[in-house]
Length: 202
Picture 1 (cartoon, rainbow, N blue to C red):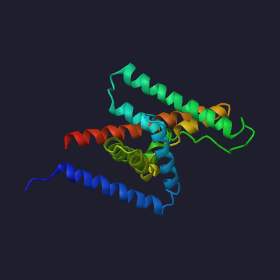
Picture 2: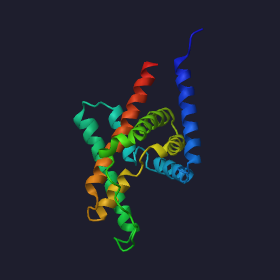
Picture 3: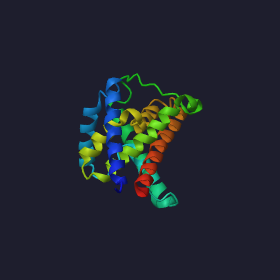
């Protein structure tokens, strides 16, 4: 009997995603899942073709032509810049140009303590691999958005918002925020690349 490797990988990925959601729900880490999924799906449908989240842009970078400096790196880099500009504008308007205190504080850079975060890094890679399969296989913004929210506990989805908040806070924590923004997205992007390569090999 021939083993259908694609079917086995599909089953494993599906079980992984469902179990992940169950664990995150038990840990109280997926309370915004429904709201976030609906919001993302609507935004992706309304702004067709927009990445919206730096993590999505990083997945596109890592699964694209890594040698193409202009077509892949520059185009996607401009998308990330536009995401930060959009976040800055939203923050300025929502806070009435700083009149309303958001109590935002920069998150410390976690890279120096990577040994303490190794399982989080592995989780980010795994989540990137699974979600990218959902995103690239489903034609529906709803499926992609709900898939992302299912795995959101393992991925940082607030990169542009964090950068925007740091910029509008007179650069408070900008170095830590910038490093986290780049590294978080790149790690999830590595997961997307890994998922794509595994799918090609099976």
